[in-house]
Image (tube, rainbow, N blue to C red; front, side):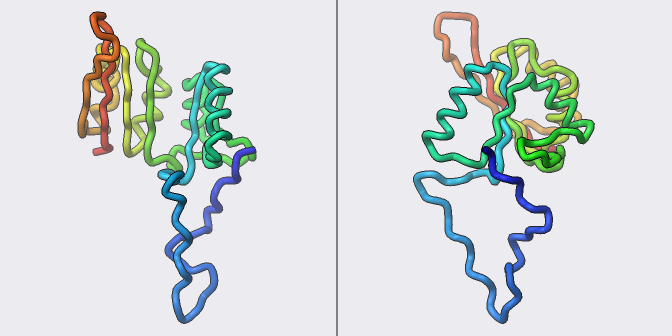
Length: 171
């Protein structure tokens, strides 16, 4: 089962017990398994891929990831309405996220997911449909985010298919 969310009153800058000297810092994560993020919420519509992700997390002793089997549009609607809950029943808010990775189908992001993503500080958008990536940028993300960097990837040589990854930062 996923770990409970961090308590809102926890302040990493304050010692747990008042004392004349500050509390020692917590031990660093193992160099072989660093926790780059406090918490990760993954959304996937394919149950086979959800099972594979959970198996990989278990094999690698990763415990800070919640995997949600659902269309991103449903999760986005719940988050936008403030009604999204994790497996422990705690409400998760849009403000709880500072980065998002989206890899939508060729058609691009749906309107609700686009509205959600536009509220998050850092966006990494991976697309196999560059025309719809451009449309998503023009139809919403351009008003809220600036493009930091991008790369075009030719994973499928001798075909017309390409991948584009764009890193964006909130203005």
